[in-house]
Amino acid sequence: MPYDALDASRIRVFPLSERRNLLRLEEEVTKAVSAPPPEDPKVAEQIQQLADRIQQARQKGAAVMLTYGAHLIKNGCGPMLNCLIEAGWITHLATQGAGIIHDWEFAYQAASGESVRENAPAGTFGTWEETGRWLNLAVLVGAAEGLGMGESVGRLIAKDGLRLPSADELQEAIRADPAHPLAAAKSDLLYILQKDCLPPGQLTVRHPWKSCSVPAVAFQHRVPLTVHPGIGYDIITNHPLFHGGAIGRAAATDVRIFAASVDRLDDGVYISVGSAIMSPQVFEKAFSLVNNLRAAHGKPLLRTHSLVIVDLQDGGGWDWRQGEPPPTNPAYYLRFCKSFYRMGGSIDYIRSDNRVFLAELMRRLHMDPRETLARLAPVS
Image (cartoon, rainbow, N blue to C red):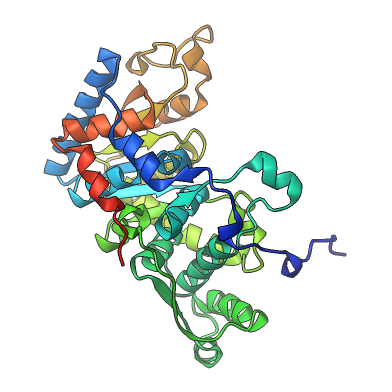
């Protein structure tokens, strides 16, 4: 017998206009691009070495991947990432569910963030109509077309909307080839459209601050941005349109796109900023998969990559080039560093605020972070 489950159709959602936002896009971006150089000369030297490795990697045509946690977006660093994308320094970006949620809200209303302490006890945390509606619809439609979660959201923002197919169109496609890899995704979309009486056609939602959106700029420049969510982790779960099948399918597509980029990391660079769980866990599986396929085809294993981890946690002053630290050193308990260290290649840990890190990296790549302030002008 099935267990009891809550009826999601009864969820009460509220307009974003009623929410008290904790973050303002202009304030956060201004703070981010004005971040001072690192106080620690060692950190400045590490960032210079990273800039050199990035330039060498791109000269060789190797991948430069940057994976980030949601705080990078909340801290107003999105426009700086976009400058790095446009300059060709970054070939792949990856984040988790919250990373695209804050990004979408900034692009839509130039504000994001809510008080968990206030809203969760009141039953209003995450129950926001526009955020849940548009992100869930973007993934439902994208999954039915075989797109990943990052590309689906990037397209929504870049194009200011999406197209809902008609029920007849979906039914015809399913009947024509019920065993097609996308048939189940189309069936899920059909179910949602009928259940919620959503009319077909073009739906428009403006994103005046889309130039600050990382998924949108990545989409426009055909740079993959993959999303690696956890089912139940993100606020879009608390919306009647949430569909775990669509999230799973789109995220599964992104996992394979991520692995394809890892396969291009020979002499490349992988940067992990403020992601202690998702980034190392996704990377180690993709790393193993790549070497599995390489071994099966008699190709050299991935060994010449550089790994750079950026976080605020105390690294104990440990040089990871010496191997794993002893249990008496605080660095031993940085599980994400150990995970990356075991993936071979070279590894460096940079203890830095992510705003300081990205602003300094731009400067070391001969770019002015303050030029990104022009992106704050809304598009009419």
